[in-house]
Amino acid sequence: MNLSTLFNHAAALVAYVTTNPISSAVIAAAALAGLALVFVVLRLAWRAVAWLVARYVAPRPVEDVLTVVSASIATGVSAQGMWRFSGDVLGFDGPLRLMLFAFIEVAMVTSAVRARRNMRVTHKAGIDGLAVWALTGLSAVLSAMDSHSFPEAVFRLAAPVVAAWLWERGMAIERQKLTGRTRINWRLTPERLLVKMGLAETSERTATEVDTHRRLTRVALTAKKARALREAGASDRKQARALATLDKAMDRAVEHTGLVQNPAKQQQMLAQIAALYNTAKLTEIEPRPFWQQLADDQAEKEERDRVAADAVAQLRGFSDRHALLPPLPASTIARVGDSPGDAGDGTPRDTASGAGVVTPGGTAPAPVTRPRPPVSRPPKAVTRKQNGARHGTPGQPSKEELARRIEWLHDVAKTNPGIEVTDLRDKAVEEYGVSARTAYRYIEQAGLSPSDTAAGDKPRDTADGTGGDTRHDTAGDTPDVTTRDTPGDTASSTAPDAA
Image 1 (cartoon, rainbow, N blue to C red):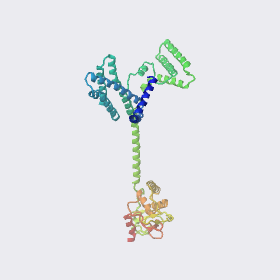
Image 2 (cartoon, rainbow, N blue to C red):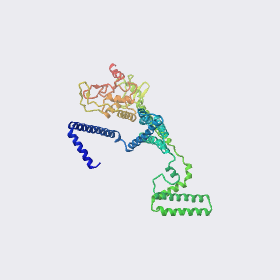
Image 3 (cartoon, rainbow, N blue to C red):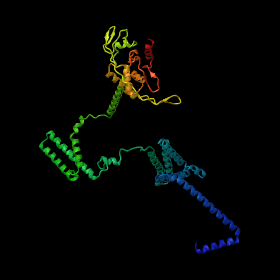
Image 4 (cartoon, rainbow, N blue to C red):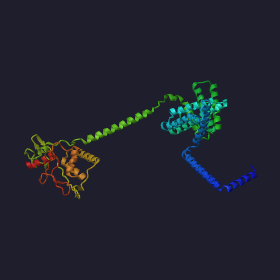
């Protein structure tokens, strides 16, 4: 088409528009509407493609996208072969052929999707994975049967297999990401064969490091051989040959490895020689199994538990011990309940001279009277809450503090074998600043209170003849004229009054 022809068409168009203005306007409006519709359709298609790419393609790695594209192409080739097979062999035509030609490919894609879902849930493709390969083989064979040449048959067979292989590799990569392991490790690989033949190494050593190790090992081996010949009493010729080989190996090691300047290589060579010389000692070693350490740890734990149990038993026995004081003399028992000048049966006793107490069975030594220092404590400020609880009273001692106080009472009792309960009470009051009643509780818990309440809980004789020990617990409290809170103390303290 030349320029004159274009001018002729333009002139004809102008003439038509001039002759038919209404129809020309309608045609122009319809063309504009068609262009607008095409623009809208293209825009919607572009947005749909962009959404699909952003949703399904962008988050995936490049290799996964390429796998899907190539597998789709291979599946299309397989479907084209089934299109020919359904028309030429099965005789399908028209809509029936269009609806039924690719049923195997659809089933193969469905099985592949199900297998991937099984992989994400159970980490196994299951029966759907086998179905993918079975349907792939069926589609390949059917497509190849309608081929017109051998190359076409090979191509029809290869297309479905390529699609299935790409799907399998994608599944393997996903399986490895989910489980962290591969399906199989081959024992015969090129790397292992090269290592076994000595053509490759497992470690990343340089050629210099490999050569140094071989030369030092050769020196150690030749030294071992020379020593073995000497110990076996071999002939001089064999020993001389072994020494010559050793000397040559040593010369090469010094020349090529830098043995003289490198202490690390010297230690390496000496370690190899020591190991080779003492190979026979390996038969004398008694290796210790790892479970022996577990048994030792268990035995040590049981020993610690036993020692702890013994300590607890000793502590409980110490807390449950009874009085360490010697039994009270008969004179003390005889004078309980009598006047200060009687000995129990009306016989006067001389306590000032210390001559003893006359009893029906004889004269018993009089107890030693020790002066008791007065106990003075500063008054404690006592306030009361609204519910009657007092402030300022000493708190209860802890278990450790109570055990120390009981141990202190035992020590005092051991130091003073003839001490009486009242004297022991006064010492506890003076030492810890507690009331007489609290001191008696300590004595009872220590097991130092005699079983006979009449033998020490009575009020002692005083110089003023009051016949009792009057002490105050705290400022403002009532006098404590009894020594214990038990019914036996009350009975023993009221007996003189009744008499």
